[in-house]
Length: 391
Ligand code: IMP
Image (cartoon, rainbow, N blue to C red; front, side, top):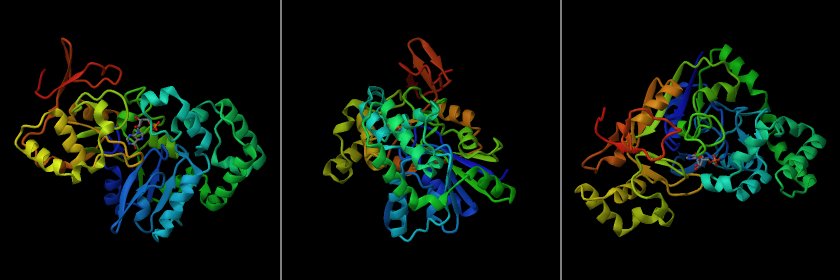
């Protein structure tokens, strides 16, 4: 089957958008199979920096078909805004299609997430992703398909918001969503048939994962994960194609980052002091002194983490949050290779490390007296990374 998948091998932000952008020329179709506006793919259109959240990054390569699959959750207002912004930049969205089985992410999902203690503890993107997928799995979610039936839509909005304890004016929410739907109605199709027809015609398809393996609902560092399956298997369910992928391309950085809470064995520095940091460090005179200490090998872990963050511009594309930074972790990378069946790896941002006199790579973990070379997402608490071959 002429279908390849690009997956993130760690906790997202590996530079998948950049790799898709490079590879896109060789494909006819770029498809997104999971997640929603929690993702942020930064792309440059000429000198203009633009962050795509739901639209596949293939949109910037002319003459491609872009598909947003059934495995995604769609905030209609954000999608329409994204399409309008692209059109303003003269980027055509004529070939963009959205699955009629994709689920709607509604304003009450976001409101519910803002009240949720669990979401706060996980430190989610607060976009309503978890509650939207929760509606889907409790079999009450609203699919784009339902927008064709206003009366049913209004009933579902009223019932689902009530279930979450959020007050809404179901009638005006329905009107608003019908108005937004009008903007994209001609793009909403059964993408399962579309993509399988394209496969039959021998068209080359690249599926683009959002987030990363270690944020996968099943294979990630649960509960500190997202609510979908970014791993390669998710491409089959999230697009409605048979699980017969030709090639899986794993993307990782020379180092690792993580946004939000949860274990991170190779982390540099203390995540609790991150919130005070701003993007401006790279522009301040302090940065020169910091780089000097890093170059001469005098920097401590906190300073190294801070340096990589500033030099690598490691701030959330969606939320602006400073990303936690750490050394490369071969246990995690091998695990990602295993669960995705990675055939080839693209390593990004190696240049960020080029001033460092020494770059570390974790080869085992210690936990008390125990030592392991296996990444076990259920048993990471207390694991300390070891950077020499231990066993
Ligand atoms: P949610 O996807 O908003 O529910 O967030 C769940 C976890 O995934 C949080 O730790 C987020 O910080 C993280 N997360 C979600 N999307 C991304 C992403 O695109 N890059 C990095 N982390 C993400």
